[in-house]
Image (cartoon, rainbow, N blue to C red; front, side, top):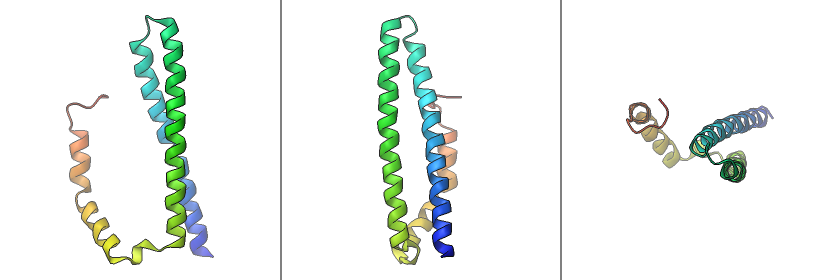
Length: 111
């Protein structure tokens, strides 16, 4: 029972994080779109609506994907799989280099 409670807590945290992430992405995308269409009012209205619709679809797809992953993890204990553990360890050893590469990227849109 305790394991199910922990899994439920983790999945709720995942969904909260995903909602926050998509809200941030929506804010950034819409601000860029609005800035680039500020001189064209009618285009701005259509662009804003299209941006909201696109973000809503992508958000729904990612939430469904997370739900699917959480359900799979509830039914199957991946941490017992040696291939999963070795792949996870391999990726975690490269985590710092990955983060540094993203943060130091000169082509990053926001600075």
